[in-house]
Image 1 (spheres, helix red, strand yellow):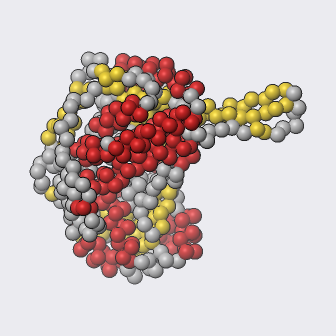
Image 2 (tube, rainbow, N blue to C red):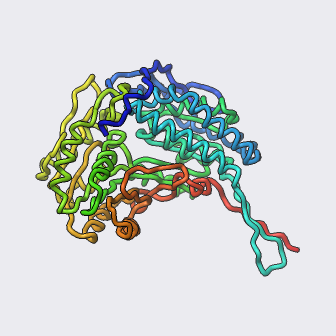
Image 3 (cartoon, rainbow, N blue to C red):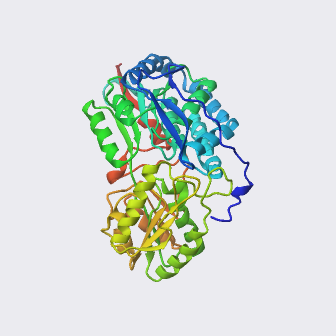
Length: 492
């Protein structure tokens, strides 16, 4: 992690960002008397701009625009929509410097990782779904009734996309791209803390040729704009990523109107290091699993399970390696770990580490704020000695904190890994191919990684089981979730 060559990537300066407005029906507009919201640079704690605070009237205007635009967009051929989405991918690559600067400023992401991961992945998502837009089709069915029977896939109509603060570009694109590819219109409500890249992407999609009204962006608080979107009768589906607690509420609201939903919720993944693991690879994977994006990663690996024969060795290696991971200004190309995205997220991490100390946990490294330029920094932290029923082990911390527990047998490792309410991701380190397949089959998770972490691609679906949600992002599975099946039977 420390010898990554990231300092060789192009430098990016902090941008000047104009105050943001809502994007409705192809027009930039102010909110309906709801005021404005500050946007904070988490690396300094200072206000960098403001955005419009949308209310129910704004959401209604956005939904109305989506309903008007969805019909003509749906009637376009898949090939025509594909051309538009491919232009989006090209523009994302062309305007990569702008996107990197805005996303890093807004979220506190290191510019090097933002360029290599967030912006690159965003382009790949639109490119991938531009291809799939041309493949949407039904099938003929042979039945004993004298008839010609076939199915077709049709868009749902208007999709409400609600996205979180940690990966604004990627997680919004993972909803918007397949929804548009299938012929839907979208009303996007980005996280209130990190709305800037959503507004820039609205500009990029318009430049690429997405018609007015097909994409609408309403910024503001979940209690206002989010609730209005969930309750609006003109929304045909909710695509939500966020915490399990808020996801339950969103699912209840959508359920009252019988709207289909996709819920990608919290996670608390375990990474298992077996006694036959390649330790060099395993250590790198473990560190990446809990410090990537400052631990604000629903598919991160904040729980490490280590075979007892390696437990002390792994702790010693990790303590030295993690202490050397560069933490600092996200606009420094050498930085690997930036600040937390907001003060309240930093405070949450502090509360969990304090609880770990109260419960007898041993802080192997870290365990404190890093005072740097007024930003929301926390040192990557490793905690040993906690019982499995500790809240610090069981609950989603969502910060750069790793708990480490020993195990003796394969069965014990699987039991510990499956022993939380979550099931978004899991991983294991082993050189035994049979064990890799055997354990992967037993892990209760939507995606399992072997001998690395966070291997993701738009073609590979991900999503949760248990309290980590339902439905899938990425892959043809996501595209299908933005369509409905119609059967036609013609008597012969």
